[in-house]
Amino acid sequence: IGVRLVGSEMCIRDRYITACSILESHKDIARYQQLGLDKYFIINNSSACPICQKLNGKIYSFSEAQIGTNYPPFCGHNCSTIGLYREK
Image 1: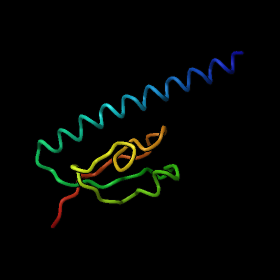
Image 2 (image 1 turned 45 degrees about the vertical axis):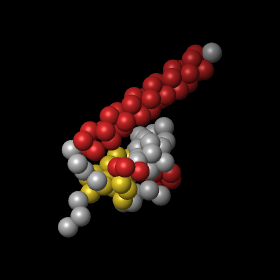
Image 3 (image 1 turned 30 degrees about the horizontal axis):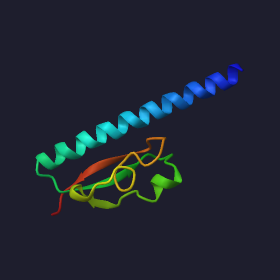
């Protein structure tokens, strides 16, 4: 029973962290658009999951940002972030 409780607590914690990340992402997108920034690119850490690895380095427009599709978080591991993209 103790193992199940620990597993349940971890699941609840992971869902809470993901929900908070989604809320922060909504705020970030709005903030970057207010600042007049147009594009961003995906950055992964070295141990990123396969879902996030596929998106590493891809460039997207803030006007087309969709959390979970082309803007993090993509998974429950939060192994991606963004960098601001500026054209030369």
